[in-house]
Image 1 (tube, rainbow, N blue to C red):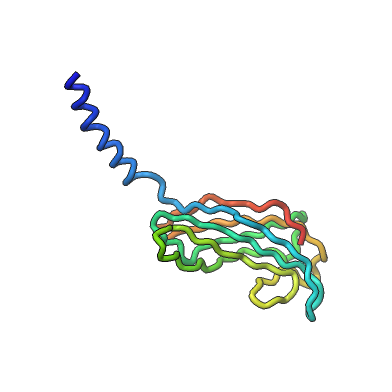
Image 2: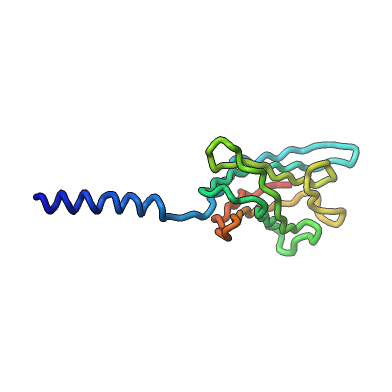
Length: 152
């Protein structure tokens, strides 16, 4: 009986310590919200797309490596409408949490603060999906999140 208690009292702290120090340190990424709205501006009518993303990283060192790939539904995508983009990540807050939320902005017409998609040769309506992933300073890649099909 004493031997069992001694074994448990030695092995339990070792197992707990290993679990705290080990584990997966890759960033975790989640889609929080996708908003699509039709707008009319002096530049014409088009679509605005806002994608809200949350990134959680143990070390909080995801800084400038957010990757976004636009996937066209068309068999032959419009060249001006296919984007492989990278975006800056805002700094992590000083509240002890290792989570940051940010917005990716696309538009089908020129709008300030939005990445312009498409062009005059592209069809007015396009159905696309977006793949998004991040990489931290240590080189750890998150899983890829994929939006549902979005009509732009």
